[in-house]
Image (tube, rainbow, N blue to C red; front, side, top):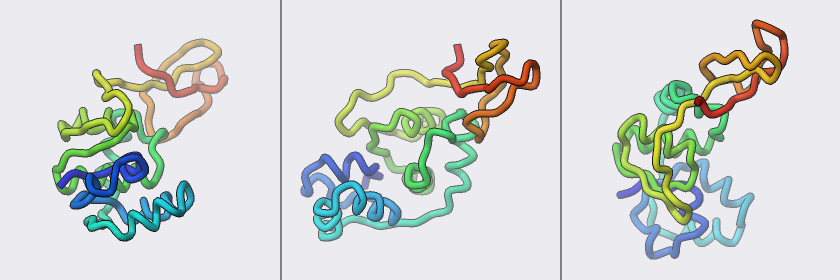
Length: 153
C-alpha cells in the first residue's frame, strides 16, 4: 500500500487511489483546495493514519528541507517513515528527504528528482554560509545582513 501525497489525491483517478495510505490532515487541505474532490476522497477505500512527526521533522531538518515542508507534508512523510512504504509525491523537498532516508518514492505527475540536494543559509551581504536548520531566514553573524536558504554549491 503506497503513501499518497495530496497531489495524488487531487490528480489520480479514484480507482488508482484505493488502498492507499493518507494522513487525516490531508482531508482538511483537500476541503480548502477542492471541496468536490474532498467529498469523492471521503468515499474511497483509503487507510487514514496519524503518526508522530518527530522523526520526519528531524530527518527534514538534517537535509535542510524543513522550512519548505508544511505540517501536512510532515504528516505524510511521517507515515512513509513509520510504514516504510513508498511515497507518491511531486514535492521535491519530500523526495529529497526520502532519498536521504532511502525510502522509495515516485512522482505523481511531474518529473521525479534525480539527485540529492543539500541546503545552506547564505548571507545576501558578505556571502557567508552556514548549515540550514529549521529556520528559513536569520541574521548573519559576520555582517548582520539577512541569510537566505539556498541550494548548497
